[in-house]
Image (cartoon, rainbow, N blue to C red; front, side, top):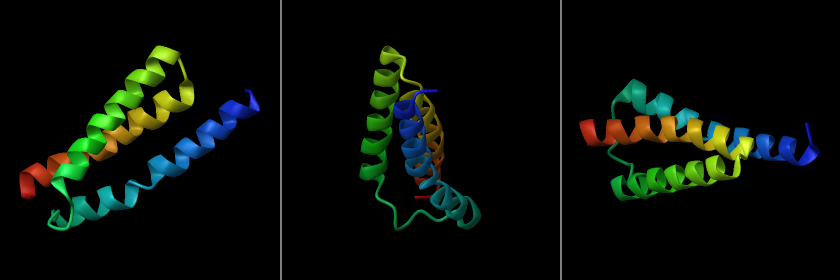
Length: 84
């Protein structure tokens, strides 16, 4: 695997993993009072666009990172909409 791809995958792991603690906390507490709905809406839209971009380029790090990030941010967004 090319070094550039490995760099992209390492960056993807870091930025994607950053959402895991928030998902876990939100899942446990069912509280999203301190989270901005508009920020998560814009974030989810941005992640969808990055995922589409990565898919069009066939860029594995972009596809993997944004696919997983979409799931994680989507979970938080669902909790925000459900539990406010």
